[in-house]
Length: 187
Image (cartoon, rainbow, N blue to C red; front, side, top):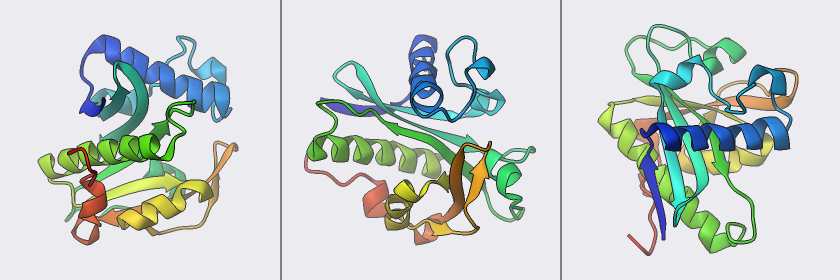
């Protein structure tokens, strides 16, 4: 069974941060190992984040974090020099992972994982009355985000000198809610 949920349990959060470390630091080399001596990829903004985990039975197979904009700039605003207006409520979706293995590489399984994560994301967006969501996308992920309704709002730029990403923005009123709500046969 595949289920997604907001993670609040400390042990599950540890597993969540360890998967991010394995994916982004070890596998992709997107950050130096020395930044994360405990082998958990977590940053200051994570303490206030909404962390969504997707489980295949008891195994963590997908993650996504939603960081709500407060007083400080969001990571994407810092990296791409963006300014959010005060009349809207912003958040940044980041570190979207789908584990690649023999089971999850099947299109039907991967599609269900994505759908379940997006459904939880949609719930969090509605619960917190978010009006706009940012995401930094690689070329590989851009099409998925465009299908949801994200629009490119800037040029591709090297992030930390490692990954080439562009800023995208989703106006929730223009979102494809059928995709965000994770339409699938098993709901």
